[in-house]
Image (cartoon, rainbow, N blue to C red):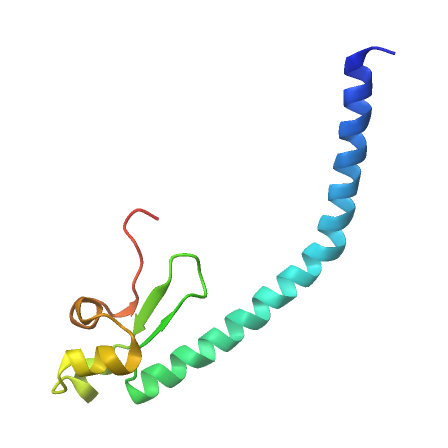
Length: 105
């Protein structure tokens, strides 16, 4: 048997194993992501309702969420104080609304 046939056979086994796991584990991953999205949506709704910004490392980027209601409800507060309480950077409090996303992503 040639080396290519052995490699192709091994790759086929690897592909079959991957496909099997993607079908079984992939469904669980999708369910976990849907659950996380629901909970994150609830956190954003609470943030919007009460004007409280938050920072999360839920993604690899680590992002702040500054509710649109923040300035109306808490704009008179010293932003350094807000940063100390929430870990959201002053720059984000001044410049961000909703999720702060990178322009490179």
